Length: 91
Image (cartoon, rainbow, N blue to C red; front, side, top):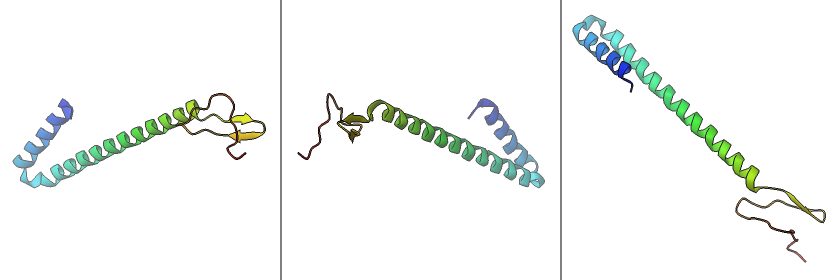
């Protein structure tokens, strides 16, 4: 929490206790703070998801290369590094 936000919350709490008739206002402000917090968490989750998708696509670009061997297409997985010529397993 930033310093300005903390000061604002302290002001709202003080306002709620000094003005009993205005307690509903403080409740709405608290609800707004919770809403902002949930929105920030959602943004962080979406950003992490985008970064994960970007990393996965980078792995695909680096490791999954389709090579041709005598008309037979062979797509290696990310764990398998294919060097030289790819031969069919069934002879």
